[in-house]
Structures are given as C-alpha cells and as structure tokens.
Amino acid sequence: MQTLQVDTLLSVYQLVTAMLALATLGGAWHLKSERALWLWAGAFGASALTQTVRALAFAVEAPRAWYAVGHLGGLISALLVMLGLRVFLGQRLRCRGPVAFTALVAVAALVLAAATGHLWASLSLTLLASALLTAPAMRAAQQAWRAQPGFPMLLMATALAVSAGVELARACVMLPWVVPDRALATQYNAWGLLATIGLVIAQGLAMLLLLQDRALRRIEQLIEVDVLTGLLNRRGFDERLRRLLQRGAEQPPVLALLDVDHFKRINDTHGHAVGDAVLSGIGERLRETLRPFDLAVRLGGEEFAVIWAQAEPGDEARLGERLREAVGTAAFPTAAGPLAVTVSVGVARARGANEAPEAVFSRADAALYDAKRAGRDRVQLAA
Ligand SMILES: Nc1nc2c(ncn2[C@@H]2O[C@H](COP(=O)(O)OP(=O)(O)OP(=O)(O)O)[C@@H](O)[C@H]2O)c(=O)[nH]1
Image 1 (spheres, rainbow, N blue to C red):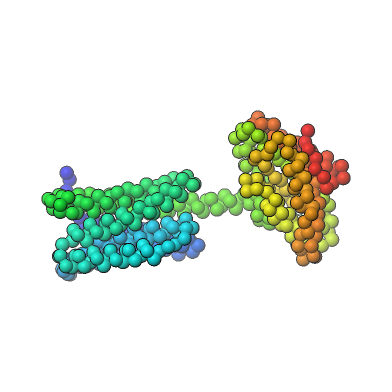
Image 2 (cartoon, rainbow, N blue to C red):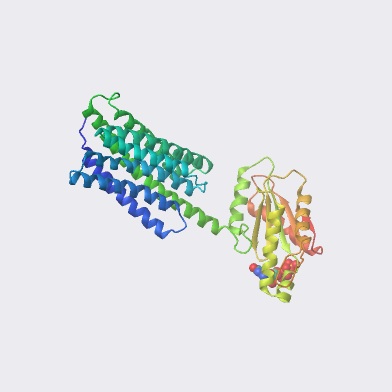
C-alpha cells in the first residue's frame, strides 16, 4: 500500500477548507437571503482555523495535547453543515441539543488528550461524534431529495452518507484494540483523511449547485407568475395544459376561459388603478374557490382561465357556474369603494391526449364568444 503522510494531507485539508470557507463567505455576503451559507462558511472556516492552530502548535513545539485542537474542526464542521442544511430546507432550527453535545465532546476530547498525552482517543471520540451529527443531516438531505429529486441534493445526500461512513471507520481504526499495529492504524487514518478531503470538496460543490438550482427554480417561477394577481401567467398555462394533455389521464382535463364583462367601463369610470384592484380581487376569489390541484391563470388583460385536472364527466356546466357565481357575488375592495363585476365563461373538456392544447383552447374560446354574444354573465359549454 502506498504510504501517505498525515501531516501533508492535513495541510491540503487546511488549504481546501480555507478556500471553501472563503468561497462560501463571499457567497453569503453576496446572497444575503441565503442564511444557510453563513453556517456553511462557518463549517469550512472551523476546519481551516483548527488546522491552523494545529500547524502553529507543531511549529512552536507546543505540548502534544494542543494538536487535538485540530480534531475539533471536523466535529464543529459536521454540526454547522447539519444546521446549515436545516436552514436551507426551511426546517425549524433546534440547535440547543446538538450545540451542547458538540461542546461536551470538544471539552472531553481536549481533556482526554491532555490527560493521556495520546491523540488517538480524542480523534476517535470526535470522529464518532461527527458521524452522529452527519447522520441526521444525511437523512434530511435524503428526504429533501425524495420530495424534489435533483442532482445537487443527491450529491449532498451521497457525500454526507459516505462522510458518516468514513468518519465511523476512522473512529474505529484509531482504537488500539481494533488495529493494534499503530503504524497501520495511522496509514488507515491517512487514507480516510484523503477520502475526507474529497468529500469536503463534494459537499462544497453540492452546496454551490443547491444554491444555483434554487435560484433557477425561483427564476422559472417568476417567469410563470402574473405579477398583478399572483396566478400563473399565459406561459405557465400553456406548459401545464400541454403536460396535462400528454399525461393521458382517464378523465381528460376541463378548461374554462373567463372574461370580465364590460371591464373597459371600470377603467374609464374609475381609472386603471381601480381596474387593477378588481383584477387582483378576481385572482384572489378564484384561488379561494379552487382546490389546490386546480389551476387558475391570468391569460392577460381581463381574461382568466381555470384548468381542472380531475373533473367528473358531465360536471362542466356546474364547474363553470361555480366560477361565474364566485366572481359575480363578490364585492371587490378598491379605492373607489367595493365594486362588483360579472364574467362570461366558456368551458371545454379535452377530447383526450390526442387533442392539441390549441384545439381545446380554441373550443373554449368559441364558447366564451357565444356567452358574450348571448348577453354576458353566463356559462356556455363548448361543442
Ligand atoms: N386596469 C387594467 N385594465 C386592463 C389591463 N389589461 C387590459 N385592461 C383593459 O381591459 C379592457 C378590455 O376591454 P374590452 O376588450 O373592450 O372588453 P370589455 O370592456 O371587458 O367588454 P367585453 O369583454 O365585451 O364584455 C381595456 O380597457 C383594457 O385597457 C390591466 O392589466 N389592468
């Protein structure tokens, strides 16, 4: 087996963690809303800092117990990575228990090193504690990945799982009754340390990718959301309708198009801002009326749409009527006082996965046109 120098590896570890600490610190400064980054910067910083103390202790030939400070880096880092992940996932930050546990282990490790003059006991203890702190972080990452699969969270969960395993293995090989040959134990530990360096880099990369992924998802969301009402916009609507039709469910989706009647009068009488307040109120009313898996959309201007992914056959008229009533019976608060409006509704059920989204839309639109022509404030079913 190739011989690895622990001291050299520790210097590499110090350098890598220092660079990752600087990168995450810069990121935290730049992206003020991502509080997890401060904790992750602290995680890498703790490793870099404790390794610096160890290197200084070595340089000034301080008592060997000082070297044990280097063992605390991985421990504090495991704690902060775990807390950072909780913050990133928006989970409640119950940190009192883990912080107390870490502090207790840190003190015990230093006391052990000072009392015995050996470093294996404190290293083994801190590695075991790190594995215990890494395990819940790994579980949280795994659950998050199951809820929303994606490469960055998979990388994070895998890096944490392997880290916990490596920490546990290193904790075991350091025990003299597990590996009595101390030179061999040091070599095993060195290989474990090499793996740890790789895993720390993988964790840093996963953090970066997670942030990028979140930013991209936010942008995608913004692109698909109508600013005035908070409903999906036309772009989001096209995409959802296409996906729903492609799914080819037993019950094809039902589409309703709504157009506010004589909306121009509201703008002309009260001004554009009052018109906006009415549109925003309609958006709210639609949201309240629909179930979470139904989709409400503002197509543009005073036109809205609703998609029901699951609707019983023959339910089209009742669904359309429910929308018409929901809007028609409301008084929308505006700067000109409460205002009431009516809507005309055209409803079409898709003819199955073979019907193009444009064709369903066009049938619903024709029905809406008929409803307008027939006198407005009514529901018309498509042919
Ligand atoms: N306040 C406001 N008005 C808008 C917005 N988008 C479009 N409009 C107005 O909506 C009105 C639509 O008018 P029309 O298409 O003539 O329709 P209508 O007056 O509702 O009449 P019918 O549809 O025939 O019942 C126009 O006055 C547009 O300026 C918006 O975002 N905010």
